[in-house]
Length: 263
Picture (cartoon, rainbow, N blue to C red):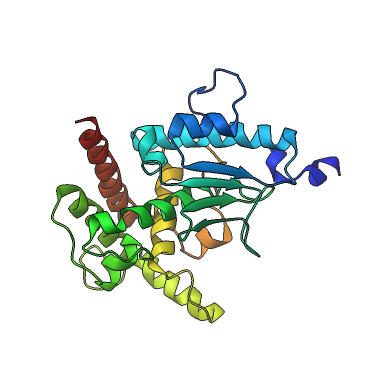
């Protein structure tokens, strides 16, 4: 009973990556300094113990994400434009969310574990849009611009590689129609009489999640549920050949981005 009252923040999240903290505790202030986040806000109902647990989990997960993508810290903070909220500013029924208006990634205190990769890609998808496409609309996401052909792609090898990743998420391998992932997302929305799973930014974030969970570096606070969850069983995550293509283009994209930043 005591374990249930403490909530999911106290569970043992599995990870097999490097010991980034060398056994020491970190603070959310340390996370801001190391990655360059624009800021962080913690809810008033988060105890000191919970704040410490969360800071360590966040730090390890963000370091693991950095290792998986082979990118520097500035990519994780989206060049110091992204802020983090923990245990504050949640939405009803949502354990985690990305607020595009304030460019803030928010996780609930006791239920956000496993959703960090998904929400981070929402933030990246939003951040990169005006850099990948000829648009100044601050509300658009790159994935929806690509799928709906809203704006012209800016000619650059990195933009082309990310566009190829979107293509592998949304289209069949022969490009004759929507991918299996997209088809299943549409069918699921129809069954619930809503438009959510088939939104391009949601499809893209789930594809990114699946790619991250497939990596040899594991962190269940960063990502969980793309293999055996109810959503996974009905086909809301990519697999087989489409997953391979997504991995090929996204890993290639982030590797190219890291090279360009080093130069």
